[in-house]
Image 1 (cartoon, rainbow, N blue to C red):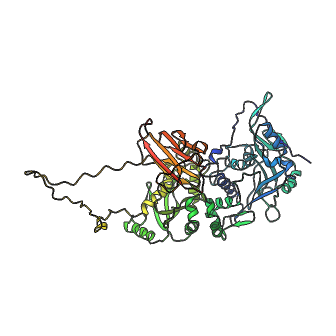
Image 2: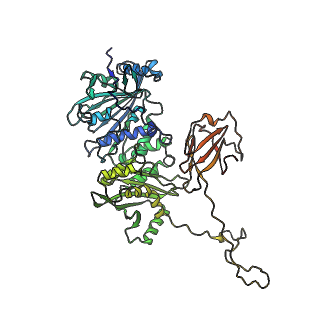
Image 3: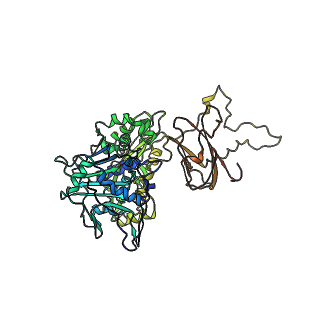
Length: 613
């Protein structure tokens, strides 16, 4: 049996290393890596789209069989991992092969000079944090591909690409190890499926590896029908990464691209496209991460579809505020509010100025709004060129669903420079400002970013009717309702002062934290309305038993044994109580791992002195 060579390079001289994968950016409790994995795979394929009149097709296929043809490609990795004191994979010891193949078609493949260290090809395999993308594409940070390594229990990925530009087929692989001494030399952080080192790049295996890799990992594409693209084989994927989770993530984060015909996703033979998305979404709605989508998958797709309808209402943004193009007419705003209250879906197009190279021009985006159905959870999503930025949302979505669609290429490019490394949110920092200025944006360069970030909230302000005073007469005949009008008050003889209404009570102080439920736990976050920091809180949790104060037993759970994430506070845990002291405005406490079949009873108390309570 021929064992394909892997190399574990030495660091040359005092070259710095970067140990780790920045996995905390991609493997998060609020966005499981099944989602970040799909986000990165689809994003890369859409960026490499070859014929824009046809969809990009991405195939995900899971495989399992007795370990045989796959062993020559992974044997060296196993040996390197033992040398690096990394854990074994039980399936390997049991002579079982498991892997996931991701193939894209109607894509350009992984281009670039194979001997140029700064080319696209070498950047992909060798240069984390470097990218040749110019901002017109969805990525650009050069680190998102770590999601493929995170998905593998071996932290290993093998790639096969056929390039449209020159027809070259190239094979390479990467495995994450640990940097360590090797005599007087020092081993690097990664090993590579390659024949040898060649100056600062890799000397790849010859053509003999191509057919063996295709057969060993069931890479079936790139025949006469599909002449170019990129395939990735991910050995021993984590169990959380399965077919339904991939389909759910594709719908949740790329529904506009699917519904517009730009993207087709196939998972183990199930084809997800514009014709099947409604049926598949209904079937796997319980796998969506967002509660609003789990409750109303059909409504979510309806909102996106409405965004492609003609003749939207036109609005214009000036100075960071939204004004109606029709002379900012209150009547027009009320008409839109009435339409929403009547159950209609309202589509608006918002134009705003963007300045680049000291030239101002209009860019636009679309927003779809409707009243949230009774007993529903508000849907709140922003998509940039078909990809979701799920952290761009309103803090208080009230009772309106809002989906924002950015199709404008100039605005999409600008927003790409504002996004974080995982492309979940729009950042406001000195680094972002400097980057925008370096790309030629002028004027107040963060103004448009601020506007888009606040848009989910501003739209709701515009389209929500003003709250009116409560009608005290509602309860006449049931209760004695005191009048707010000054009345006749008996005063001492000679006192001619007019009767005065009582002083209004002081406003209620907002609580320091708010509680969010999770499928298997809870998240406690700082209340943005609270300002009197620092604060102290205690969180007491028990399984509900129908009583006002349910009992807790150590056989139910122990908080100290559950996954707990904290930020901007000091935490102590005892039994079923967690105490957080010196809490600041960025406080976050997240507790997961509870029995999903039982309801939690959560009690929050705040106190001023950490020695009391």
